Length: 247
Image (cartoon, rainbow, N blue to C red; front, side, top):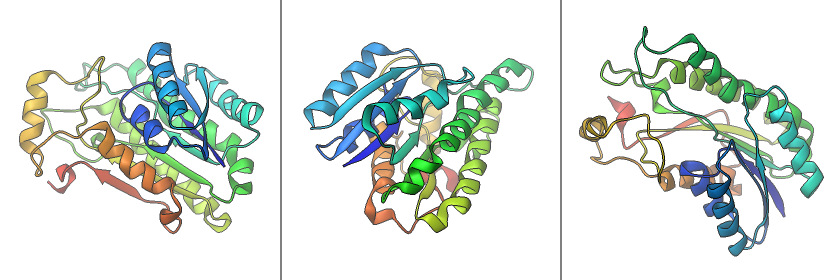
């Protein structure tokens, strides 16, 4: 039995990950900032697959929210074996349009929250026989196109990747792996998109494989990185983008 924390699990990639990993051998702690309806739906789907599930609503930009998630895992399941740091948001725009407040919020919600969660969880991860951390980065930290810039998100995701590599180096000797995936353009399964429809069409034309990604494309990569088959892979960023980052 293993316990997995997934942040940002109410929709999109986070929800797809939860559905993929749910089984009678997995306890899930699912988090969302405010989407209780979506989170409860994903939780029920995971229960149908056999998982014991607990849910938490919290804003990871709050000072102590990240640490409380780790405490919740321990209080509910007495363990925390694996972490998927998925919560975040994207803001499209150029310098002069994107505000400093956006940069600050991006840093608090993504790399700072990741830092706090994993720092609190290190003793639990190193005690586990299947310790894994996967952070969800983004193509926007690697692909820069004047027609589609995300400066605050790019900065936050690049910081996230650097933190993940540092943690990977620190925990490698304990057998804990730490990796990132960097999804390309990925259709949401509902709700707000930072990208207008015309931009989606333009994006698809730039992807060598000729289509926009789905949440399940990324979830499949995360499922692999959490598995025993990936126990010798650490410190990597895997691009799930249909070849977008080749250009």
